[in-house]
Image 1 (tube, rainbow, N blue to C red):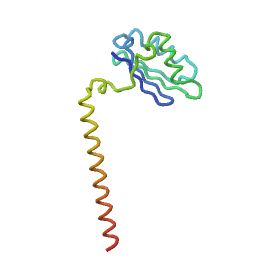
Image 2: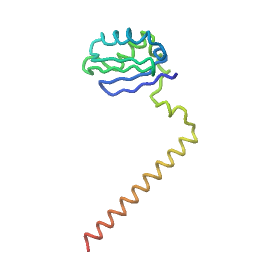
Image 3: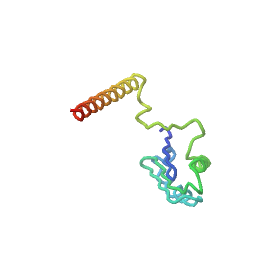
Image 4: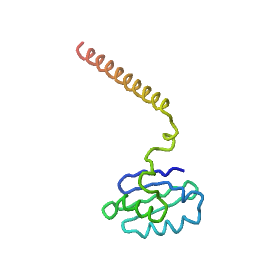
Length: 127
């Protein structure tokens, strides 16, 4: 399982292969995270391997929490993580190119419709 991170200030969610299918790790990890300064709550799921931490960004940071998780063996060393969603890691270059093409065409069509409607409104206002 690739480790994954999602972060917004005050909320950090990571997935860890060390937690997934390891119910014995849940309670001790939750307690240790909740004992850290600035942590408001922490929940760990052995089913998904997810570690969710809500914290006060004035007291601690995501970097500090990740360092703590790394020190405890629940987070990999630098360079072994990804911020991509799981499904994006499985997409090949051809799929990415098709996605870019479709997105570009959708934006072009939306712009075309917007310009057309603006011109109709302008002509209607003039008449």
